[in-house]
Length: 222
Image 1 (tube, one colour):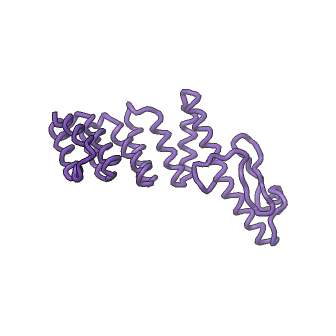
Image 2: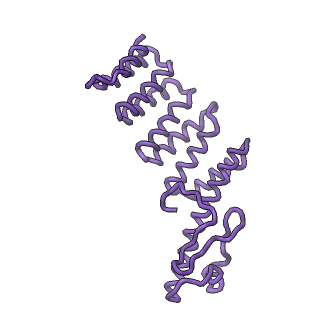
Image 3: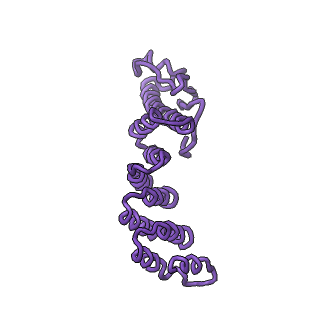
């Protein structure tokens, strides 16, 4: 009854102080029945989306995670809030990792974790996670998502490595190489890497920049 009342009360937008006791209300509801899942979820929505207090929302969700260790949704929701509103990719990764470890968690959450590792620029670890997801993929959608991430991550690692070699070349010869193969001829590289599909990267000799024919712009810098 208190939960039903809370939904009705927080649907009234004409009250100026409606959020003063928000956390207390939902703590009371979840103290009465600690394993009643819906108040944790609905309460967290009101706290984050209506009251604009993500920290309060995550405290309620973690209370749910503590009281219902068999549920993955609470850690997943915390991961989403950390990513969407706090832009804290490291925190989001930890929550998604915890949620994904739950036996009942869907495969999507592991992909969320891997993407957070990528977003915080841990490219080597992100590549390992996505490669494992690709190998274990059970459907075309999951396999394609993993392939796209592997393609982009390999490009970013290769780009960083190639542009370091190009920088050394410019310091030595006071110009950019005419093509990437000049890095090999100059002894700066044993061979020139290709993208995940085996295609050559696109090189601009006027600027010394390297790009791929297909780029996924999950980061604004690419």
